[in-house]
Length: 224
Ligand SMILES: [Zn+2]
Image (cartoon, rainbow, N blue to C red; front, side):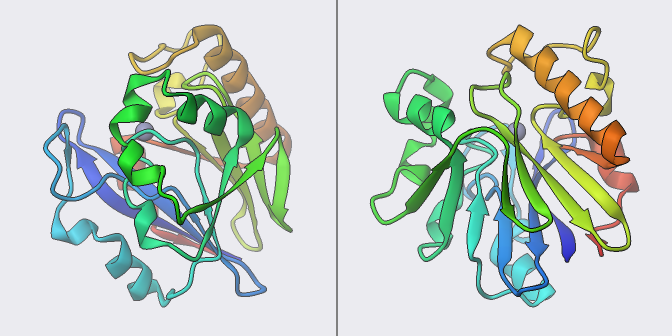
């Protein structure tokens, strides 16, 4: 099992990365987590030629993606779903139902990129093991049905991709963490932070944050 961090853009104000993650399993099934922000769209996120998702995958030697895990469907996490017409998209049922309801304006913004008739969504409920060594951890709050990913690597050990449930290291303290403007439910944010921090402590997992400029500068891009 290997894990690769992919840089799919930069948040102009914070200098923070817009990431995705590629997990190569021992059985040869590639799992992509999130698809980033689309290129060529005006907004607070810069996507340059160096951020091409397909180029980064081919550099790793990946041509076929079996699963795309959707942490959630915000525009900076679901902008390139169309590149993977043959993949199975795995999302929490509560999040998918909220997204299709049209109730959350920012999910509507990117709807033309995730609500495509040929994309195959598989809906899951709560914490589930996707394949041996890769678990999806429900972590609502930023938005209902956000999910994080726990990967068990042979050398590095467990790695918890917290994504937007704990986007920066300043948000590691459940009681005193900041609630960010895009967090829809502050109480749920705190209880998901508690859940993830406890899980990471129990498993002795490295927590990788979703949008932490300083942490990303310090991280290797590949783990085995
Ligand atoms: Zn995000």
